[in-house]
Image 1 (cartoon, rainbow, N blue to C red):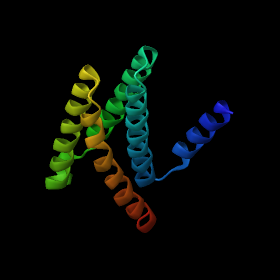
Image 2: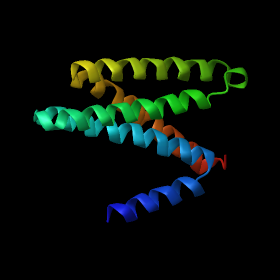
Image 3: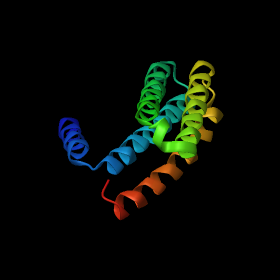
Length: 127
């Protein structure tokens, strides 16, 4: 079943518009942060590794978003997103080192808000 889900996700990513791909990346960040939070809340020592892995993957996705920014043409919006992504990366890093759920929980609504915004954009514009 997991293999089918991975195949579906791969096809979805390959056939998605650029705006839909941004949505998928944001959803990946949100999903992994929520997973890390659940693992940390579980409190079991064997969940620390998976929590760290989930946070690191969320950070990698955030870095990908940062690298995709067009700072020349994007102007103030690109700069604001760049600063936001830097904040997320730092908070995820601190949350991972200290297993601080609050730092991770504070990011999730910000990511989810951008998911909603980009879903609206993806529906309205074929980017």
